[in-house]
Length: 86
Image (cartoon, rainbow, N blue to C red; front, side, top):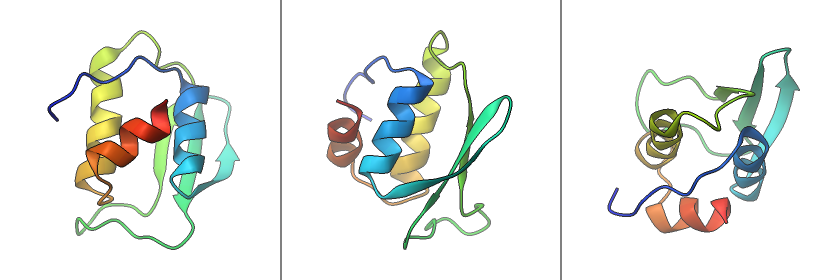
């Protein structure tokens, strides 16, 4: 990733996933779970959903890891991900 990842909270990331075509398949007590409507991960062995905790605001490294997962494992471009996070 060449650009700085914008700061976002869990609800902002959930909205970004919805803009990218994911649907909410459940919200547990401590985490969100999203699955893409018609796209599977391009990396073999990756689970076909994304799970992330409710509290991600303070952890910048975890925010970067979530964005990297979308780019590397799901095949989205950096521009698509950053546009969805705005």
